[in-house]
Image (cartoon, rainbow, N blue to C red; front, side, top):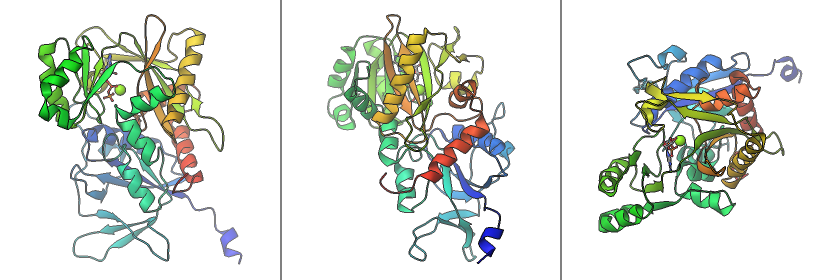
Length: 380
Ligand SMILES: Nc1ncnc2c1ncn2[C@@H]1O[C@H](COP(=O)(O)OP(=O)(O)O)[C@@H](O)[C@H]1O
Ligand SMILES: [Mg+2]
């Protein structure tokens, strides 16, 4: 048969998936705007699918401006009549096919999707649940697998894993739902013993949502309640004094070791923001300044890049991750967290650090899709 060789290579079909059920819905939409703008359409056929806050999937606009951040409105996916559902086994093959089901009509196939680019932050996107669903459907996807996603989402378990490979984590306590509801005073006592200030956080959230900096014992209860609005499990950490240094990690090709960017530094401008809160991240553009490469001695740059790669491998990372540290005045690197789907707008830290390290946004997207296409589904 000659027809196959005569046909030009089919473009890879990429399902760009965004929005989602978590509190970071709007951030995900802004990321999608950046990706839809930059993705190389000569190589990829884009299928844009938005997940409404209700969890419903819809075929949505591929126009980046529909999802970008305008000064006063946060973008949001609303479910439309073009509901998207994942196909089940056809011809002995599971999934890989998406259907659009408009009410009252026969579901129509969107064709086979080669790879999913989940631009979702937070629970039901970055935490392994979506990844499990895609594995079940035998679909390839960009980024961390089930376990790495789940560990990377959970500020308690990531610390357990980091400590197990010798990375320094700061002092913390965990307050489970049962502990809080049966004896909140005991939890407050354990937290108080860490000293002040404290950072009280939902175990599984992001974008600084639900986090409170607490100055004294009297503030703990309200802070725990605020965190519990996001997650029944709460992590309380001793405040770390140090500069905020971040490293972008990209899985190596084939059997290569993970690649690390030059480190960046987040400097919070003195003023309204005592720490890197939601407003400083997304609303008040002048509040935080990213410098990359961070002004650090060569030895520290080496050390932080090495630690970032270790953190990535410790959780079993794949694709990408951003690893965040505090660099203390005594020269210690205390790991704060890993993000398996970090902010990914063109001006976010992760793409910026790669840009400063010689890898542009469009190439970065290309690289990530390539890594996902190269690996299969299932246990790896
Ligand atoms: N233990 C801590 N000591 C000092 N500052 C902290 C601590 N934990 C968090 N912060 C501040 O809060 C910000 C958000 O916390 P983080 O744990 O990174 O949550 P998120 O996942 O929402 O980004 C950090 O970037 C930092 O500015
Ligand atoms: Mg953070």
